[in-house]
Amino acid sequence: MFGELKQAGRYLGQSMRLMVGLPKYGNYVAHMQATHPEQPVMTYEQFFRERQQARYGGAGKQGGCC
Image 1: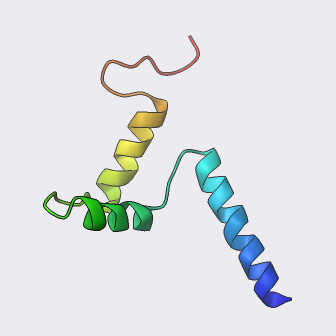
Image 2: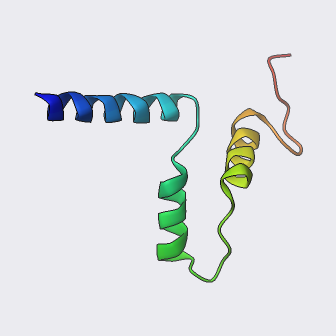
């Protein structure tokens, strides 16, 4: 029973992160190490900032509703 609750909590947390556009940093690091080992890996702060800009607007993008 506790295992099922723990798994449900993980799914809920993952769903919430995806709804707000914030993928897991650990997944990013694993992907970079597996597929792009020659490239540097962003720090968590850089990763967070890049994901926020990609979702809410950055260079050349219009943010907001108006």
